[in-house]
Image 1: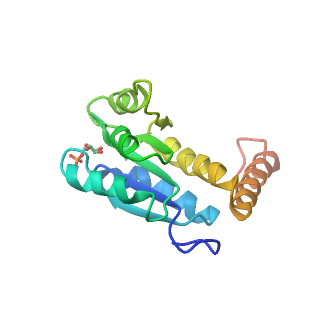
Image 2 (image 1 turned 135 degrees about the vertical axis):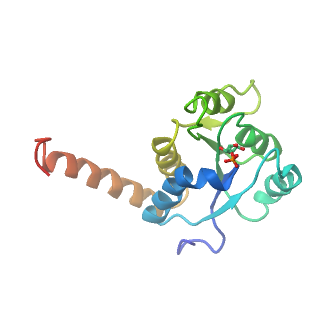
Length: 169
Ligand code: RP5
């Protein structure tokens, strides 16, 4: 989807495998809710390395302003994208079957100095927060997105305050 403010998607959501979609769909859903334009694509660092390079090298000229990259296991996708373009890259560690996502988390967060990846939590929470953080960053430049983030925060606060008794719906 696209925002009213721009023609091209602002955010690229990529993931290492179709199997990551169950996690990464939460990032896409949150960007939809906030009205942030985005594209979604499977780009594997080890199965489609040439595509990864093409994606990263063309991201800026295609108008993307930020990349959210999700991967699991030996999760080198976020770091490799960050190495090949200067856009901010947010990494989402996908919960792996073998090690519950600790492998993904450490692979993404432990970037050596020089190439940063902003790493979020493992799984759904990380995907949602990657979208919220992306919107906050883009909100510096796009007032409509900044207002959408503020409205989301207000509604979250109001829904907690509206029913403080956890035994009731
Ligand atoms: C990584 O390997 C992907 O990001 C995925 O999380 C993991 C497993 O991929 P599949 O074997 O399910 O395709 O590249």
